[in-house]
Length: 149
Length: 172
Image (tube, rainbow over all chains, first blue to last red; front, side):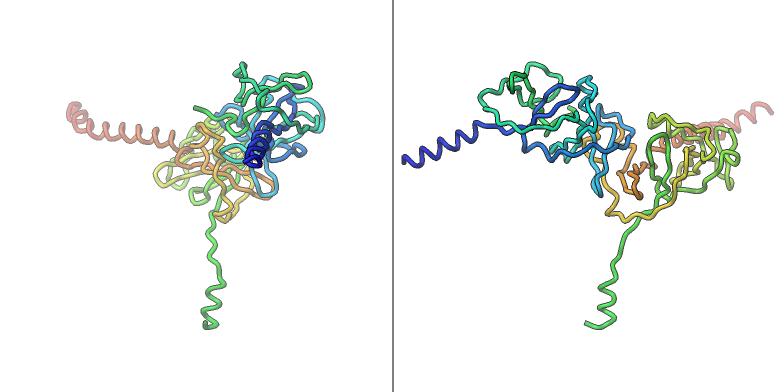
């Protein structure tokens, strides 16, 4: 009984922590759940695709894999900073999607789920926001980023 | 198993599709090759709105405009591709004809679902051509405008034919 209760406490403690990747776009710090991130690598030139989908107007080719590019910097009206820029692969619900991010190398953080507040700003799809090192950081909902309707 | 049978079983049937790869603006596009009726230089195509070749009228299709692509159609490598789907015939000006390629159908990839708007009608998918990522154009969509023009022209002709005897009769 005691062991079971302790086990339950441990599960709750584990559940309370969210592991996030903190990255930046145009100097703005953003976060994403680690399970929503497929990887980070140097940015390679994207290929323009005629498209009317907002912020999805290019693709990226990696070996024999192609993936759409989501222009999060333009959506946030920010200019990417640093060189070389990095590519964050989002595990989007519709398949992998590349996002160009600042050259600053992303970091891993564990945040308390209870400290996550609903995001007031509706600029982008988020899971809420959290304070990391004194900064208010929005946790981007990568899985549904850019979905219309 | 007989030797003949064994030989037969090792032969794989590979389904391929042929495409004419062209460049327009910063995009590389693939046109299903079975609809390509010819490729003309600017000189051969002339400056008319339509091109007549082998007795067929090919209406001009402004693919750059349809795709909202900025293209420079004044270069030496500009070509006019005569294209037909059997019903409609279009003359498509492109900046460059890159080449003809056979692609295994399994290497033709669908357009990622993150593309959610008109482009889903514009393109049937993507393929890799060497280092290039090429968008497979949907010929039915590309020739849609031409089909409408042809249909209107057809209706007008039909009306003229219908009106013909009365007009002729009236003038006589």
